[in-house]
Length: 74
Image 1 (cartoon, rainbow, N blue to C red):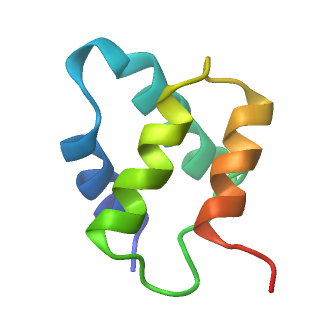
Image 2 (cartoon, one colour; image 1 turned 45 degrees about the vertical axis):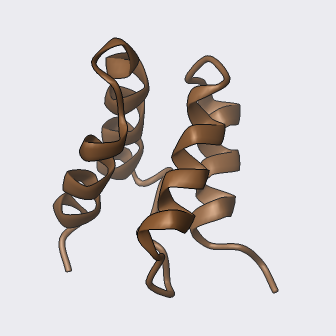
């Protein structure tokens, strides 16, 4: 499935004033620093991950943490 599907779900969770965060997520998928979740995420799980991400400034470090939420190591 193309990453645009998860971006569409994320876009619904990002507020207008958090557009820098959305742009950082989109760049992350395009440049390969973010990968779609291996296991499907519920809307609640995705919303929690995005809410945590938007509490900090978008950066390489915060993208890495978000990627860890998408694909946690077991």
